[in-house]
Image (cartoon, rainbow over all chains, first blue to last red):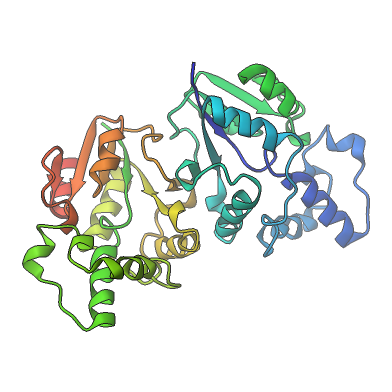
Length: 176
Length: 176
């Protein structure tokens, strides 16, 4: 059966998390303990007075435009797009300077997803469809579709409530 | 009962239609017949070889940033926001250069609508909610909510299928 699938961008298609980690480590000449990164939130691993600085990385021109594509995303999303109805749904409105960058990033890496199938929003409970693939348990909780897939990211390592997909191969197994 | 209401931007909150007409008239030093504007699509009233030029106005830097607010929109949307759950839903993804401009325009004129309640999308049938206020019959047709309100614009003057609202006072009468 053809499903309507919504796919989050950051941490699912685009590697924003490790981009922040590397940017932070470069700026402060430190190495964040890799064993702790899967135990705690990134914000718990840096000094309080570094929080605003790390957050500001997300607002730097080019940050979202230059993110790496998460491994397997292009191939599997292309196959999902052929079999199902695929929408990209990114909570990008928080960072207005990212809007055009995200659009250009999709043009470069996911040109087969037309503008009609790209959604920049805040809340995701307003989406009407069958599947949401997201790294945020908050977004999955409020989504009213039948299938909620938690895409693994260091920050959600302890979340138990949802069907977890560790990589795009596992998404393929479930949906293709 | 609290309703989830989606409100389109162009022709409903922001006066894009007359901005194009005035921009066109200024460029070509002509006056489009006002009696015909309510009978035909704008594109039927200009020579074929002007179509691309008129369309390109929408891609000019500043076009969306400088649109006038449609009369009554601010007051009524502020009241709707207090009583209901209001989302702005604009099919802005067609014009990536408009994304930031639309965000800034909302910041200026509708700052009480937070980023979480702003949606830039293509198709609107992916929206889950009760009411859609839109000038496009195409968007209203595919919306699955219970109430579809056609906001009057010269280009939809002949559409009969939906409950028509001619201005924001009429929206207030129906929803407040």
